Image (cartoon, rainbow, N blue to C red; front, side):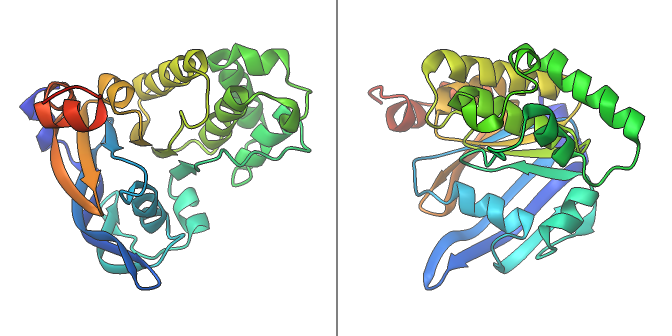
Length: 246
């Protein structure tokens, strides 16, 4: 995307964000923004602080310092359920589907904040159009699905809350290569529908290929940021994350 995208009004803006676990400073004062309609990735090795950043945004982990602004409002430390009602949804690492419930029941759970029954039915069918594999198995319990199918269900469930901003935490983790490709195609489809996305991902190549912009995180700090295509061809990124010589 071009420089003009930098002028988009940020839907999410982190300023000097610090998050700690006990005595461990996991996130060390990062700045990050996601414009309305953007797909932005935060990449880095395991333990870089990516997931902790998301937990700080969502109010799951207390913020030590700095601010989280969403849709122009300071939401630092607001509880997750309040943020969901404001249109911020998260798909956690490890998916977290309800294994004993059917696919349809899981999707209905994603719409718990809504009272428009006809709209909910319509959106369940919309999720099925996005994920035909789920439609075929709609009455199957989620615990019997493959890891990739559970990831699709977790994304579909998050979409049922009609989010304005979707936070995705490591959607490719533990999936077979073919399923990883399908999940990323879905992320791109959701983005094209107008949902703003912050994607946390270890698979730097795929994340940068689908994103508009990217941030590189190391040891709790953002070390690089910019246009995704530029980062994809940056020698330091290629050496560190794509297994190529600098």
